[in-house]
Amino acid sequence: DDDLEIVDLRAARLKNKRRGEDLNQLVLFALNIDENNANCWLAFSHLLELNKDHQRALQTTRKALLLDRTSRRGLMRHGELRMQRNDTKKALTAFLKAHQIHPGLDSYSEIVKCNCILEDYQMAESFAAKALLAYPLESEHSAVSITLMGLALKMREPQRACELLQKALKIKPDYDEPLNALVDMKIKEDDLDGAEALLREYREQSHDFFFWLKLGEIYGYKRDFQKALEFVTTASRLEPENERAREMLGQLEEMIRENESDLDTEEDGSY
Image (cartoon, rainbow, N blue to C red; front, side, top):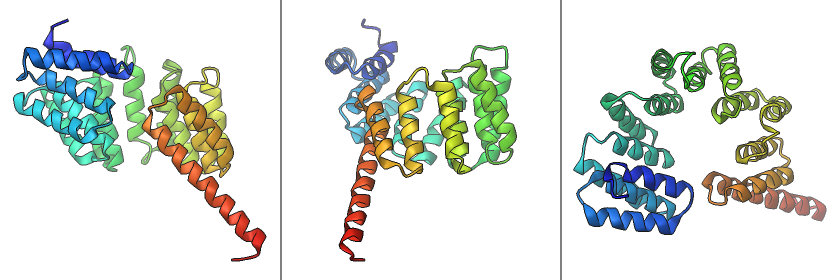
């Protein structure tokens, strides 16, 4: 229990389980043992994030990196919090530094995703190719590496990207990332019925958070805001603290209010 080498990993687990009191006790315990240990400050960042103090959480990762500039987990955590703020360039810098310390599936994934957001698809494809070499078809993580190449090729070779993403789904049917990408491609093509059919084909049996949230997103594009609101509300009940779901609920409620206002204006005969 007093192993500070993994205290940040324990903190992340408690945060994900939303065990706030246990997480608070762990952080206090760790910092009392050694306030100059980088992992203790990384653990503190998870507590701050749980408490929605995102700015201090980011500052706390900086403190950890001042104590240990070669902390790979510190760099990955800093990048993660940068991504939450949509600060993709600074996140990418952190992930690249972590990757230089030790290439791993997590750093490959984040680097490819960052480069896709920044529309540097050549760099994304380069790292995805390296990930495929590191995690080939016979490895247990092949679904992830194949998905990364599919993401990297979405713009340049959409047909090949679809084939790779479908292959990843066959390997790991419950993996959200390739399905999310395939559904997004259907949405971009304005094939909303196809997007819904694809989602239901792979995930309807589980009816999990991802299914309901993505279904809500599709119906938002269909401009059926009432149904979209119902689906996102169901997702939010499964993960009440999920910020993306809460953000979507606010947007959909606003759209419904605007539509009702427009209808009232038309009925009044005023334009």
